[in-house]
Every structure is written in structure tokens, then in C-alpha cells.
Amino acid sequence: MLSILLYAFGLVAVVAALALIRPISWLGLRTRRRAFITWLLATAAGIGTLAWPMRETRVASPVSRLDRIVPIYQFSEVHETTIEASAERTYNAICAVTVNEIALLRTLTFIRRFGQPTPDSILNPPADKPFCEVALSSGFYLLADEPPSEMVLGTFVAAPKAARANPPPQITAATFTAIHSPGFAIAVMNFQLRSIGATRTRLTTETRVFATNATLRWRFAAYWRVIYPGSSIIRMMWLRAIKRSAELPAASN
Image 1 (cartoon, one colour):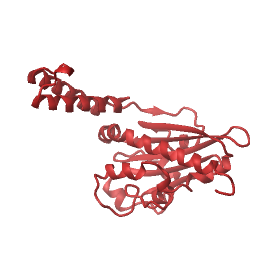
Image 2: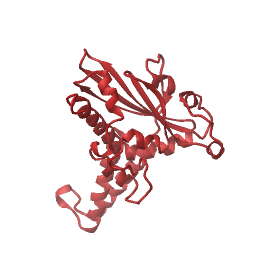
Image 3: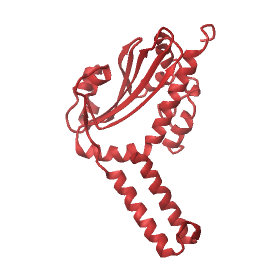
Image 4: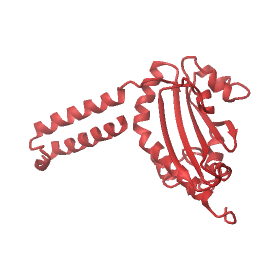
């Protein structure tokens, strides 16, 4: 909701800025004075939306691996779909789909890196590689692999310099669960599967972000509200690609 408001205020500010050059009567911006006031109000509202504090959510009764790894978080998004295939086939399809099979992925990551050329990574994924493989080779960790019920991936959004210089020899789900010291922010996403009969599966993906201190939460809140639409599109397109792959006839999959 806040992301929608942010982009709406941004659009109003852009239109008002154009009306400063040439008034737009049919939008009610008949004078430059009115256009300036509109621009000022829209800009202030946009800044306020960026700075609006996030509520913290705590899981009272964990029911998934994600709940146990990230029981406290400030940011989240959830997407789901129903797939006409067994949970086993669906689970196998999660990390089988390639970057090219996820519509708009390369376009959105191109926009996210402002078109700058970078080495192969999550922000510049090679078209022919499975997206999971790209993620796991560029800062993500497999925190849970429990076919055919749940897979969990996680990454560090921020970490103190000392922690980056001396990372633990092995990073596991317990590493993420134990993070409470100031200066850390983690992002963890899962794919959870629920069988609906023998050949039908409900697939849900949830992403949670937990920042350990107020400064990080404030900074990430602004970032989250800007990138949220693109993030949601990527996850929805990933689910669609998984659905297509899992529903292929066995001889073609």
C-alpha cells in the first residue's frame, strides 16, 4: 500500500513539475502557483511515505521453517499459486527454471542496476542458468531443503564490517536465527508446498526482512518501498515459471 502511495505521489509531483513549465488546465493546474503548491505537497507526501515507520511482526506459533528461522521481521511479501502437479514435481521445478523462463526478470534487474554492466550475479543473471543457481553463487544460502514441503533461501542485506571481515566458517539456518546484534539486516524467502490431492499443489512464497536496529530499519524502509513493485513482479513471474515447468507432461519435463 505504501509503495502504491509513493509512486502515486511521485506521478503527481512529476505532472506538477511539468505544469510549472506550462500550466495544465484540464488537470486543475491552471497557474504556476497552483502547480508549485501541488508539487510541494506531493513531494512532501512522498518523503513522508518513504520515512513512515514499519511495524514489527512476531510469530507466536511457528508452523514452518521460515517461521523458525525468521520469527521476527519488519518487512514481508507473500505470493501464491495453485499448480496442477504433485508436490514432488513442483518442488523439483522451483530450482529447475532458468532465468530466461522468468518473464521480465532480466528487464527488472537491468533497471535495478541502472543499466550498468556487472559480473554475473543476482542483479545480472545469465539467461541460460537456473535462477536458484545464480542466487546461491551470489550471496544467498540454502537454509532449508526439505522436499517436497519447503525450501528456504537467505542472504545478508547488511552486516557490520567486523562480521564481513570474519564470517563464520559455515552459514546455516541457525546463523540467521541467532542474529540480533545491531548492524545486521537479513532477507529470507521460502517456497512452501501443500498438497491438494495427489496431483494438485498450493505453492506459496514469502519473503521476510529483519533489521536489528532503527537506523537500518529506516534506511531499508525507503529502499523497500521503492523496489517493492519490481520485487513482487519477479516473485509472481517465478511462480508462473515454476507452474509451467511442473505442469509439463512427464515426457517433456
